[in-house]
Length: 306
Image 1 (tube, rainbow, N blue to C red):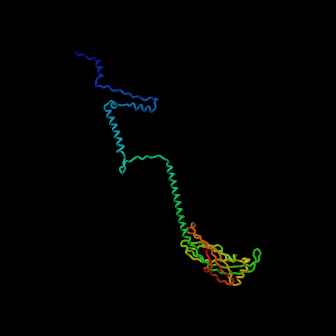
Image 2: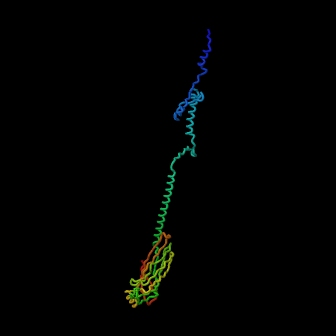
Image 3: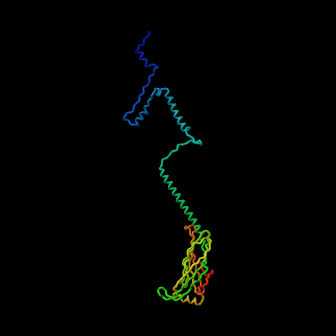
């Protein structure tokens, strides 16, 4: 006997049919308005949403898709880290330059200070070298001292008589007028000299009876020059030495006198920075006869040069 199925049975059996599988239902939980941003991000990450059923974990293609995506991520990372770097001309991989932040004013200040130090060191070195050079030149110029030689003394006037000084004291008075001839030689090979002298004094018994002055002049290198100095004395009081002077002149041996002066020379070797200075004290002994007007010549033993 056949049993007929009712519509209710068919309806009850329909959901159990394998042809129409039951689709799962997914829920997406929205974050609360009062929650913070951290709770929002954690809630959204913990509750994934899927747009289509194929993206659901129960779908067969979900596992394959996740494996492909993960493998592509790992392979892409590996390629970018290994083979994706740029290489230079020598084949070495290029690295990114890390720029460090810093206060560049400090480096600039150090650069300025280092330049100043270099300039200061250069200036000190130049001064030292120039000082050594000047010292060497000065030492080389020391031996070049002017050679002085007193040649003669010509007496133009020589007479004495009675008189009185400015206080009215009576004494012997002497008047002298003469000229000295002197030779100067500059042996220096690379600089000239400026020649001058102190007062040229003609003395009798420690009394200056005549005086003169050598005019300052310039003498070139390796040159000779003859200079003349005029000496004058007008009514010089002799006081106690007047008697011995008259006696020496009356005998005819001549009045003993001494010619004393000092010659100064200055040579500018390197401008006014390096100078060569020398002094030569000259002392000549002589006898003057009032009745003889011939030049009195000096020999090597008559004068001393110190």
